[in-house]
Image (cartoon, rainbow, N blue to C red):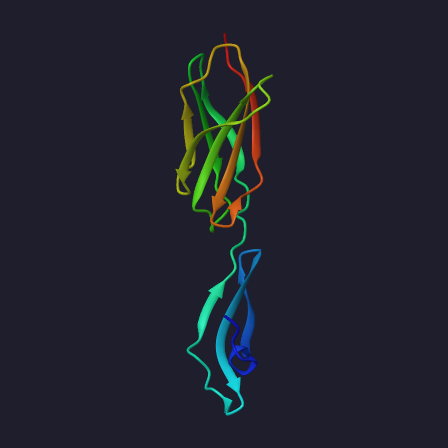
Length: 146
């Protein structure tokens, strides 16, 4: 349905500001809308605010805290205050693909992998994640004992 041109015109006023968050810049926007036609311009609507999301930083200092023939215990440091979760995945040498082992709350700093086999080479990938997406991976490679 075509509307007359005077009813389709809208003007969007917005104010943009930077909000510092550690070393990550976040953009905040405030919007108000008004309309105009041959009779004039309406008052501004109520203001609505929105903030863009940024990817979290990758976890740091991924390390083995314990390793045996049937279990590998990993730990890391969460460096992302804006992370909502941590994704732990693993690739077995020669498999060519990663398997997500767990998606943990961001407060978790360790994971026990009880699905390993003796004498196998694995690469672990640890990522922080939020609604903007996952961080880059921090990796750790190891071979379980026989």
